[in-house]
Image (tube, rainbow over all chains, first blue to last red; front, side, top):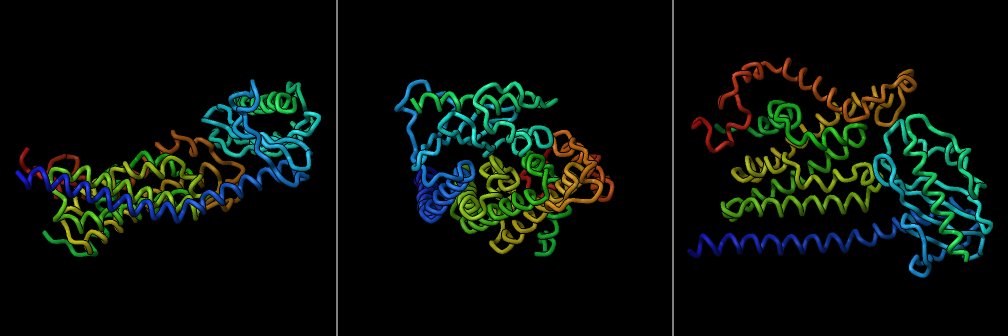
Length: 174
Length: 221
């Protein structure tokens, strides 16, 4: 009785306790490194998008009405040279995360793809300069952006992200 | 039958190669094998988890009760996977991004579970270490073989180094899922052709089954 019911429970419980302690220790070691690295990558990406900015302050989407759901993060710059938006839209193979910088007139200064899972060789033009460069200076009218044969969904998703960024910009600027 | 350390090690690579002979862990093997670098990364991460789980399960083999062994193994394997995930996320972020969902999915990789159930729970610690290293090496090499073919033909590069001519004339299908299946099938055909033992396996009975040694009911059915 004791051996068949108590022992298995005891052993499994002990294993779980020991394992939890080990994981907690590992977490306390790696967590600061992971958070700091993520913060650093975000800072680098934002500085590449708006090189003139001296600092970034996050804006909460809860303070405004009607921010598109695709907008994940919004920042204003300390020296008021523009805004940064990070948007995640659905592409062909999953979410496409786009970072875009907008100047005070509502023109795209630059944009780039932070992460995506589009088909390699077909949809990864959204990382490339010839495609994302087309958005520089635009504030609406994306019909002139090149149509990509065989990758319409990816192209449209990227444009959708940029459109959402500009909608958010109008709301945030007030 | 007692196997020498060398036999245990090479068995995991050749005779019982997890991917090419036992056909275990095919999902990560196909998904991550688009680039040689990722294949090595996933192979090493899997080997680490395999090593950890084999060692601990072998040490605890006298303590873990038969009835609750499955939950015990799952907890241990999952913990080693999370350890590996945290370490890779902190110290090798590009690899972490490349492996994506397949890193946490090592926890449900049947190769690791198979080694725990078939080997580590019945053998000494040293033998289990050798078994983990052998099986891990077999998994890594199989992945590397598939990934090399797919990267060379599909992307015209190998470990990121571009190959002249192929660079501009690559067949994209090899980087996609169908290409993975084609390459895997061709490799399996080659392995079956080369290994003479496998010809006997056409008969399919316990004597030709690579898992017979660990199967509790070998010869009964």
